[in-house]
Amino acid sequence: MTYLTERITVDPRMCGGRPCIRGLRIRVTDILDLLATGLSAQQVEEELPDLEVADVEAALKFASGRLDYPILAA
Image 1 (cartoon, rainbow, N blue to C red):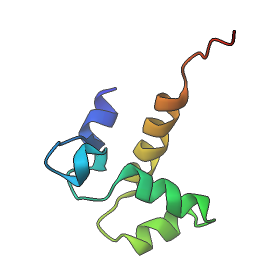
Image 2 (cartoon, rainbow, N blue to C red):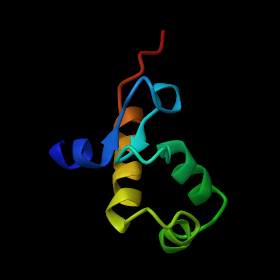
Image 3 (tube, rainbow, N blue to C red):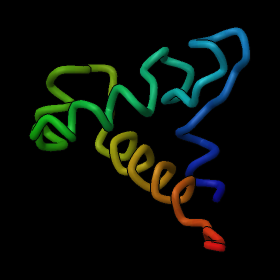
Image 4 (cartoon, rainbow, N blue to C red):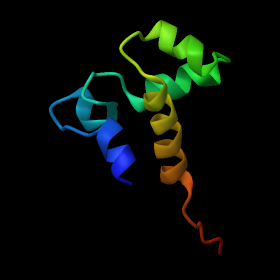
């Protein structure tokens, strides 16, 4: 998890406390939204030039970790 903590930051004073990339005010959801529209990781980096390849990977791993929990169905 150290890898993610180096890339993903959460600051209540920035972007409403939403997870961001390295304190850049680029939210994890911004990256996910661009990927969801069909952009490749390289195109996302071109759209947001402050990003690095590892930032896009970290955003995906972070989101995956947030969604990977058991749901109990009654």
